[in-house]
Structure formats: C-alpha cells, structure tokens
Image 1 (cartoon, rainbow, N blue to C red):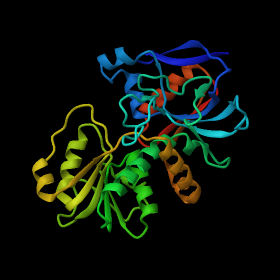
Image 2 (image 1 turned 180 degrees about the vertical axis):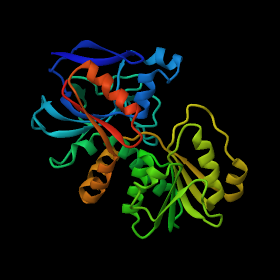
Image 3 (image 1 turned 90 degrees about the vertical axis):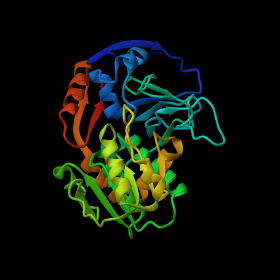
Length: 341
C-alpha cells in the first residue's frame, strides 16, 4: 500500500511524501486519531533546534505523542478498531542492564526518525499498548509525557532513601503538573510542594499541599526529595535552589532538558551527600504502568483534563501549520490534534 507521510522539510514548511509499505509483514498497522504537540516538535517547526541538527534530521515527520486505532493485524491477535497508545522509542537491541530508552542505538520518533504524522503507522507488536475504550482521548493523546514522569518516579523509588515525608517539584509547566499529581496519588500521606515563577500557573495546582513562587520560599523550609521539571537555562537556577533547600542525602531527579551546559553547586552536592538522578524519555514498561495507573485512579485522568488546552482538527497541511502556530501562543496546557487528514 502507499502510505502518506507529512514531513517537515524546513522551518514551518510541511510536504507530503509517499512510502510503499507491504501488508505482508509482522507489523501492526495503526491509524493515528489524536496527537499532541511537544516542545521538542516546536523547536524543529520553528527552526530553533540549531542549523546542524536541522540539517541532519530533516526531512522528518513530527509528533511522538499520540494514540490511534488498529486497522490491520496480519496475525489477527488484535481486533480492528482496538484503541492503542503508540510507543515512540524504538530499540534495535536488548541489554540486561541498560533500559531501552537509554540505549544509544535506539531510535526515537520525531527525532531523526519519522513520527506519527502519517496516514498509517506500522508498528512492531511491542511498540503499542492497548487502551480502555472509555479513556479520555484528549488526555491519552499526551500519554507519552505522562510516562516520562512515571519513568522518573520508578527510577527515584529504586535509588532514593526511604524517608519520603515531603517532596518538592520545581517547574510550573505541564511536566511539573503531571509529576506533582502522580506524587500526590502515589504518596497521599506525604506533603507535595510545587515551586514556580508564574502565579496563574500555580493556581492550577489545586491538589498540592503548598505552592510557592521561587522568590518567596520560607528560609527554614526543607524537603526530603526534589524533582526538577524546568529545563533550559532556568534549570541551573532551579537545581541550585533545590540544593539549598534539600535535606542531606536527599535526591534530585532531573527531567528538564537544556540545550547548553549549565553550572551547578557541586560543592554542596558533595557536602550534603546528594544523589542526582538523570531521567529521559520512557519505554514500553512505563506505558503499561501508566495505563494501569490511569485505570486505578480515574480522578487522576480528570485532573489531567486541566492540561488539555487547544483541540485542533487537522484535515489539511495548512491545518497542521495552524495547529503549531496556535500552540506557540498557548500559555498553559497541551495542544491536541484530532488527526483527520
């Protein structure tokens, strides 16, 4: 069959390319239904990713957050119409120690490898997880982002000490919101505190125990463990502030991505015996854990509905551009694309 792929060829310019794909294979064919725009997609769309990276990775179909429905399974293991969440990380080898999302050989959709902006996506059987029929599709569209927070929590729980009376989350954006929410559901008896710059964003965090603007933190406040979801240059100031307020032998879980090296206070990391845990992307197990978590906590899904900002119906290439442009002007939440092209 001929599959249409909608690729970014230069900043703000998409073109249709055609790929001949055989149905006589083990791949399961999925029709994307709802997609979500990520900040990384925007860096490619606007051309701010850097000339070298742009030249190396374009042309490329964007989007790595999305759900769809199965339209063809050559082995008939899955019924046509089964809703699934697509896993963007694509490993090409197994390792007994290193997780699939940290293997340097793994491919990742919309990062040098075609993302989900296609008529049909051909997936290996371990690259999707089935979804309940009644799960909110607008929230499910950005499940990949939720799995990043879930993956970070799993790594934290494997490495941090057992004193977990209170948590601090730095970053009042989407990832900070999701991380705070998972912490509150996972540790209902513990105090969860959010630290951010924007009061109007902090007001969305109605479920946390305390919310602070970063220039109004009490001097005597101390936390057991912290999660950094700021990214970019701001992560430097967030990490150093965390170091100041963290109890000795606490952990800092880093999730924010910075394009450039940052300076942090290693002297106090040493003096306090702080453990710094890096966390990036996610794998199939994190998607399975997240789907189960969402089944068990329907109120968690309701809170995540707050993150649904714009919902854009896409039927043409111009609609794709319009969706990305509107997302650039959004001050809160995620832009969800209803994929009807």
